[in-house]
Length: 292
Image (cartoon, rainbow, N blue to C red; front, side):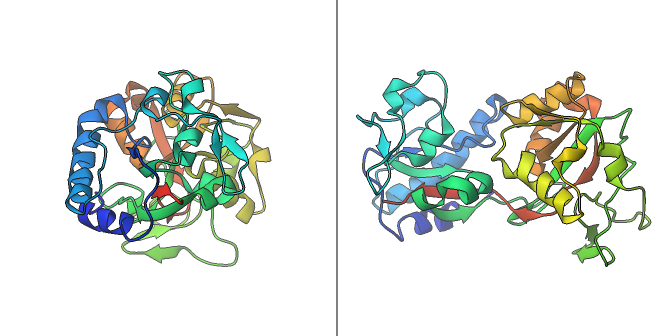
């Protein structure tokens, strides 16, 4: 867990957004995790209040929790970039609207949107912590490449060797793009490419780093790409992707390491799945605030 005092200090180190402030921690806020997420926010909120910031009592979890922005949300040039939250279905949660809201005091986002379209709208104030999670280390995470167990037993780790080199050693593990965590296992193994070729890939959204871009980039680094898959199945969320694979509507999905950990605790579909390999480690999800 990120240090609440450090995060609060980073937030107040620059200009604050316009009031009323909003906060959300949506990326790992499964219904089964609400109590833990609320407890995490309470620690951050209290640190902010101790620094004189009127942090909201509760997290936003739906469009109706976001203050209206008459005329829509505008960028610094005055162009409308997102609709007024009051015009959206109240019980849904549009993350693009949340992330661009002028009152955003704190939220989690993904490096995919940050790279592709969000970066100028927000300021990064911290990174999530993936210590102690399979596939994670400090601020870095990997995506688990999951398949149905009968097709990719969890013990049958496979890897895609680096071009022109051996395995990259990190800490006590041996990691490479699309690699199983091979600590204590003999180096070598069958390539993941034949295992993935002509399979149906379930992915959450196309600007997701963990569910789409990381896998795409690791494949391209080895001279391949998402064209090896027979079909790309958009699901709208990691949990939906897991269910799609377990139910046979897709064959493989890339799921970020923390979400995979949650799935093993709370999602029955995860019992049908195994990890065939891991994407390369990348910087994990950032905490952001509005950049006024």
